[in-house]
Amino acid sequence: MIAFSAMSYNIGYRSVYSLNIHLVLVTKYRRKVINQAILKRLQEIFETTCLKWRSKVTEFNGESDHVHLVISYPPDVEVSKLVNNLKTVSSRLIRKEFYEHVSQFYNKPVFWTGAYFVASCGGVTLEQLKSYVEKQSSPAN
Image (cartoon, rainbow, N blue to C red; front, side):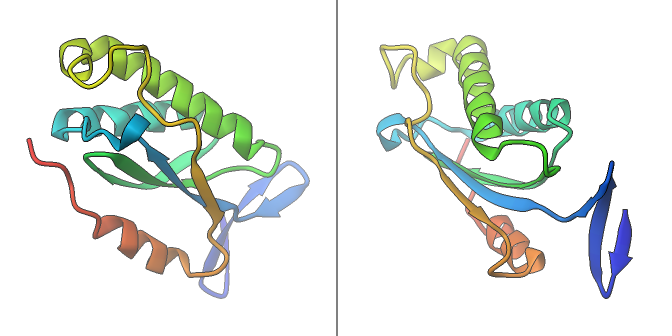
């Protein structure tokens, strides 16, 4: 990593980059299924999955019906494929590991809504975005 005038950049093969996205995933039907234990496990799943994509979760938080992630990723990673993998892996593991809890909200094998929100972090500074994500409320136990 190198820094140019207070911005840090990653160095890849034939590239120097700073690519960050703000990703919001919402639970199916906005059901308030995410509790503190699930939120903690989601963070672990997202961080592990991102590493496999040579990416990094730099910020994470959520509420009972959605999560916010800030992800740094290399230029050769397709955002749509990364997001779909994050959704698929997390949905499968959460439904398996928290079956009793999740089955109170869904009788089908679902967790996330089909859509997602993603925005590049160019319109605001990363610090402003991190501050926004950090200030999100966490679900109650």
